[in-house]
Image (cartoon, rainbow, N blue to C red; front, side, top):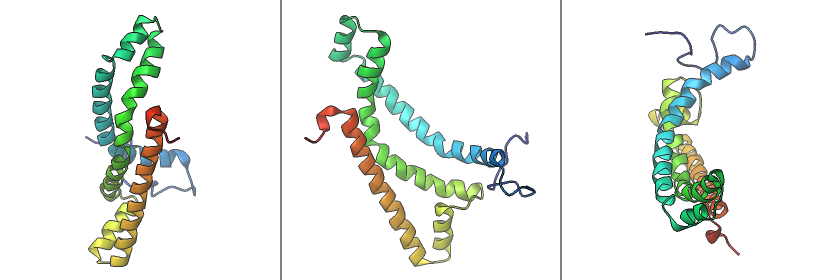
Length: 162
């Protein structure tokens, strides 16, 4: 079934007469962005659901209810904030998952990018390019883990450095 709602590949329409059309670019990015985000959304939503179900049965949430705090305040300040702690832990490795998924998405949707460049360099045995790409991805993973640690300190005050 071909509906023609969204283009199946490329970064812009081939017959585009203008140099840059924002709406055309947005239409071309919807499917690749959806494919990249789909697996991550499933993982994060399952973890968030499990953690929220655990947190709502803890003593401090029960105490907040007994004190008569509004429901929104209980959910967002007490339950949601403490449910985010495991999410921060998997943020760094999730960045690696997005980067590895980008290789497939760039190949399937014919997008130029680092993943496609690394894959073509590996097929052509361009070892310096593969080495540079692996170093770049490794730096991004380290920065993702650093961001995860910083956010972990923001979400959980017990972990902050003094």
